[in-house]
Length: 362
Image 1 (cartoon, rainbow, N blue to C red):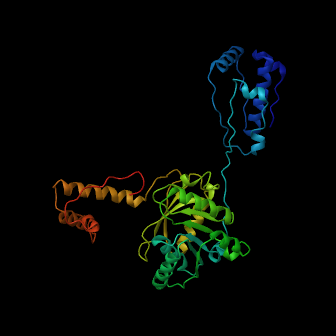
Image 2 (cartoon, rainbow, N blue to C red):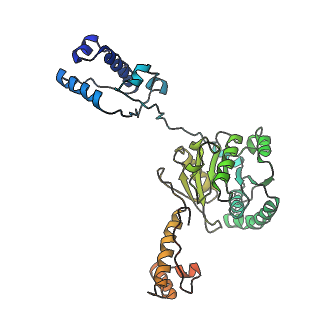
Image 3 (cartoon, one colour):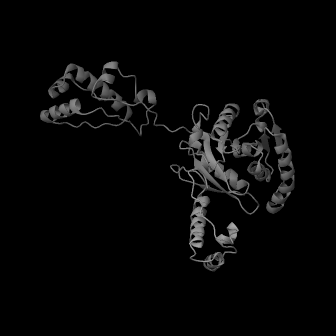
């Protein structure tokens, strides 16, 4: 609602005609965006406020929690106001970008696209195909794809027997991914609902691949990175991803029928709708997702951070001669009813030197 401001009221404050016009325009901006209250102040207080306005340094103001459209919240302001010391307004969008997921029925029929047929890419392909879902596995290396096909053929049966399911169809694609995805654009059942990069840990390569894939897949297709060395926020921008609201990190641990944890981490701008949808899809293939809070972003995995602390301190006390490796293992077995202690996990039977934690990964 627009609040009328009489010229006599403005004159009572002692403001100049220019300042009155600026104040009136500012009132229009604010009243279009938020519910305002009229606060009457004495003339002396108004003059003091005027002095503070002229002597205070410029500040940046942000209007938030508005239900009005952006065009109503922040109209084009006249140039005198932009140069006035009264205000220096930064125009930003306060409405988060949403994402509309495919229906569960569509997600079961449309494939998961995995880029990279290395050790992890082929394991992910096995998991997603283990409940009858289609998977497209791409790699520029024909030998890598042939090796992946052999692995998937051996492992997929074990996964399906463990889960009591039937295998899905795995399609391998080498060479030009753009041609393959362009051919699938006319068939809904061939258009991926999620694309996961599992290429070597090279940031420029990951940015390039995800940026190219983004332009080829439907708008409802999620973009995921399995990198433990780089955050997905680093893959956004020129030459990379332009839609961070559908981008996230999916950290798959060592995949086997007995190890099924996956960490889901925001890009810093991932739409909130992404996480419950992806959790449900992963639960459908008997994965166990761990969703990190939206503000949490770091390199590596949760378990890796914990394990690095255990491993580092274990090596330290052994190196300093405080205790023997076998005694540490026996302590762990006794306290945690574990089958193997940390030294056994590391294959440690002699003293070693602790490896420092790097900035990227563990």
